[in-house]
Image (tube, rainbow, N blue to C red; front, side, top):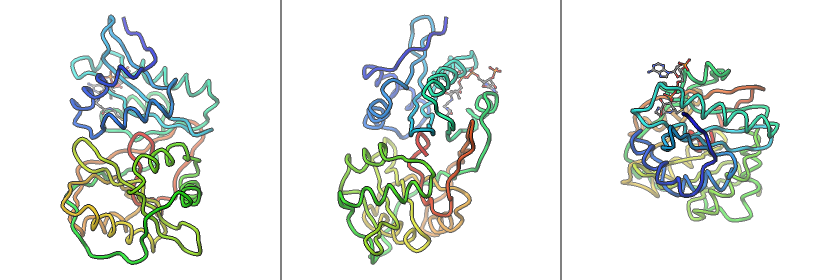
Length: 278
Ligand SMILES: CC(C)(COP(=O)(O)OP(=O)(O)OC[C@H]1O[C@@H](n2cnc3c(N)ncnc32)[C@H](O)[C@@H]1OP(=O)(O)O)[C@@H](O)C(=O)NCCC(=O)NCCS
């Protein structure tokens, strides 16, 4: 019998095991962040008492993200993914969420389509070693008093108030926040975090002028490291910049939405914050 229950901190080992089997990049810090951002909205599926699947949600007022849909490989195709997603959607509906979003792998796509998600656009997962391109003039260390301005830029680009997520990312790794300012306001920002397989570069939201500067800066600061970056195909400039500098496409993800359509200004989205939160 399939039973879906709330996720607890003790389920971290299950989450880590499942994501490792899927070859994903998340760390214990990522799982802890999912739970701290939405403690009542992350779920585990059990089959006859054995935990075998996960899903996380993260609400930003009327918009929410679904992530970490993972089922033990030998238990797939038995309705466990559907049970997890149905529970997550019921939870979000009860909270009054009007738009549910996610980044789908080809494996997840049929399930999401069958539950009412609509395709929006593709992102390329780029990977490769970062190479020093020299100093990027105009990029500075982000300070605490840049956070609100960065969040305002983020809201203009994503049409979502993602402050809880952004402030958590900035707080966890303050030295990683890099910004470009014009007249006191942030016109571009970028941060990174450690991953199990590669440095994760993103989110990076910026104007056309600030985006390449922030990418150059991250290449210089993390030269020699292997990195992942998720870039919307609609931001052709970001894609070609990264490919010219040695990164290559590993796979694609499909951004989808269920309910009221909402989308980003992709030309200002240089790197997503990750498949779990856009
Ligand atoms: C995606 C995933 C979570 C689905 O879990 P699952 O328990 O296998 O899903 P379900 O058994 O509930 O199947 C749901 C739907 O998926 C589709 N599906 C499941 N297995 C399938 C298969 N082998 N071939 C094609 N479609 C399949 C069907 O549309 C199915 O609909 P149905 O209920 O009408 O048959 C699971 O395959 C997984 O962990 N994949 C690896 C990680 C991943 O890519 N996650 C998605 C991230 S966005």
